[in-house]
Length: 197
View 1: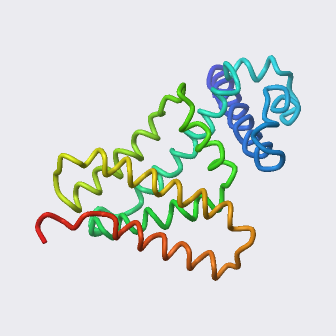
View 2: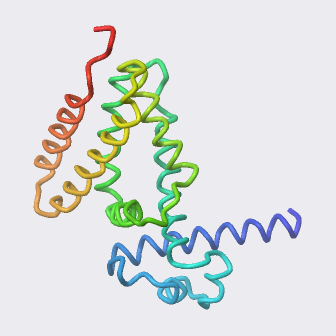
């Protein structure tokens, strides 16, 4: 391995360490306690080192969320293209709700970023959103309202996810599963019937 390759690997490892620390700090202490200094302390480097990788806290958060969207995208790619579109939508809804419950800190950050005027969707966020649009189009057919339907569907899914995450500490496993099933059914009923039915 060349020196250049080794340095690039070390750079990637440290960047991943910063993003992992981001999730830990937000999960343990809340988003308001995430600072460049708190990240530096957590990874045992100077704040200057963090600034070598990220311009500011906003850029750290954007990278953290993009990392989560990448994981979501990779999971979506595992779903067979031979599965009917409605089944894909159901799998994605349930997967999204479960991911929100497994990574509540990412969800808090995501929702804060989505309402920030300076937020610029990353490559994987766009891929995930385009995939949702394509699956909806495959199910209902081409329509002038597809963009609006996709935006509404994703907003509703995120809103339900936030609500479920907030309530989850007071719910039994059975109650959580019931809410996931109910939310999935409600979201599916909100999708127009296919044009060919």
